[in-house]
Length: 389
Image (cartoon, rainbow, N blue to C red; front, side):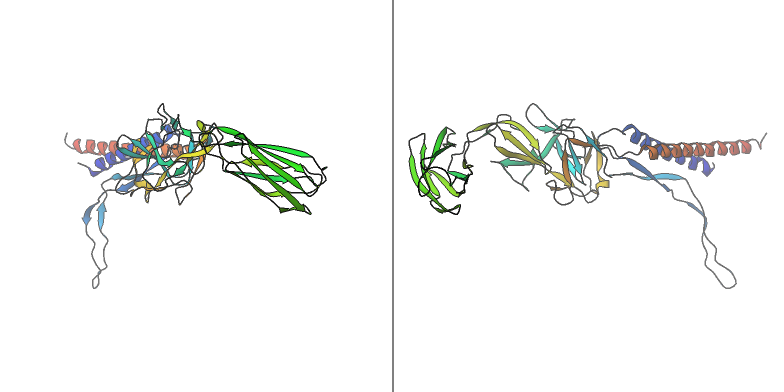
């Protein structure tokens, strides 16, 4: 049989693979974070019909004569170039600006994906559209354990941030130096005990001939007194006060004329329940509580590979690590080469339609040309059979 028949068959098979890959790229033109693939061809082993010979006295050397036996697919590579940004406005939509991959768990299988269209399920777990669980580091009392073991990112719906007792108060601003003797200024500040019970602490500033007298009292009956004196607006006497276990710092108070801006603040807070959340660019899930407190709940991790082209596609826009991809190196968004996160946006497919339709034409013509090889070889065989009539 003619070798050209089998060469044509190999060409049909290879160009059919190119058509399949190109068609898949076009089909996924709107798939979130899809990475286009490309086919590489290589020729097969050639049949040697005459070997090479070296030059001798009076005779030159000759080159080998070989007949090729067709083509085959050398490999199908994935283009991991960054896709364009698609703004969605959804807080759980995340886009990686860089080379990293989100880490997800599906059963006991660890997967990696660039598609950041996530949401919280009824158990408060951050999940991908196929139900895979997004992985990250948890937080204890608002502190993320960077570098520790990864686990599911969970938003605890009934989370409560504990109350913090008030231990200090800061007074800042200006007491008017030109105020009449006997003028009184009252400033209230809210304080909390360890259980979160609020009480009022009142500071009364009374103008005297030499400065200001300060009288402090809280709702539990604790009292304290001191005096403030100023020289050219700067505090020279007094500045601290202790009321019911609360240290009041007044060292930042000034005493210039015509300004009455003195105000007091205090630390501490009541207990609060989780109301909402935000996702920051470093992957930290931050809970917003009813008492105004903000606290880290966890942090999403990203993974990188020495050879991302060695990853195996696992469906649902996910990949699996292989021997040739290397092990995943996990890090926090914004560190190393993993890239940073953009909340409220998704990465679009990096398929170039103009290039894909060109490849489609090339593959179609290649398929037609190889089909012509087979029909031409068939005509040659027909002529051979017609020699015997």
